[in-house]
Length: 364
Image (cartoon, rainbow, N blue to C red; front, side):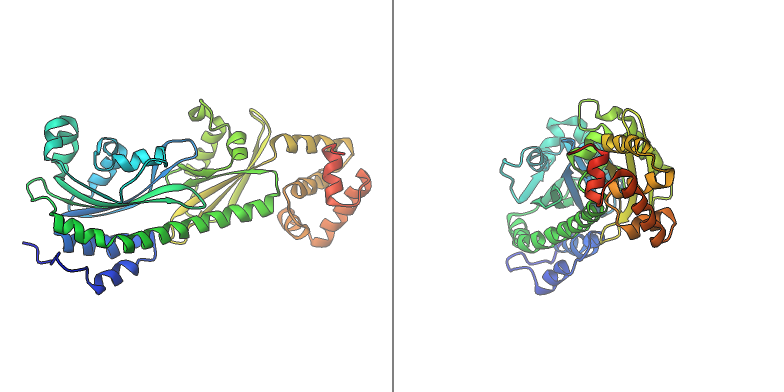
């Protein structure tokens, strides 16, 4: 039935096809499709799984080749927790000290007898009987994640043979190289976005990154504190809910940013930026700046008799903006911005930005 010879190494053309994959959206055409044909599989799936800053598991990019595309959504929503083949990988995400095999294989005939719910609700409707999969655990500079490519046969098909599994295992180094590069490219894009935000906002800022499903992919402690997430009542954060509502209510595909301020339960300035990773997937960077600091600076501006425009200049300085950036944001010329800054220095009695912020925050 299947003509692929599994006694020899995979062909050079197959390696070339796999190694030419340059983006996550290309996994289906460069990895899944050729290996479905080679292994005599009926379907295949790629899944990116990661541990969120809140301690739970989420899924990122995924793709599917086969006759049951609806199975992916159903699997990710509920049935991945019952999958005995993937369970070691998911356990590793919760405790990376555990050993994780690169190869996962399984036949579900016994599972159908032992777990009637998993069998009757997922395996039988989607005709999945046998699995061979490669799992790559990764700790990038951005997050801990797993990348998995799995190949399936129908319930009535013969299981993957030892020769076929061994042949597939030889592809491990190539798959490992490609999947790690794809994860690293994504991490670089997201890290560069955070670094740019840090440069603009100064040292006193928080951040969270949401993916296109509005799942928190990464965050620092300040951002989680400002938004009231990470504690036992994470689902009830009103500010987090407001941010998600704003994102759902706008055209998220467009670039640019939106800034707003909230005073409940404490003053927080929030900026939301939409951006895309190197392979075009949508992400959202949420930057929080200075809760208590913003409130203190506002009070100090009034104390020193600064005008409303001068207070706006000070708020940009506190956010780490240079003269050109703050002038552009306020819609004034660079010279006008510099004139405002000189007036502010005179009123507060300082001669530099550092002295200005120290005086306003009463840091001596």
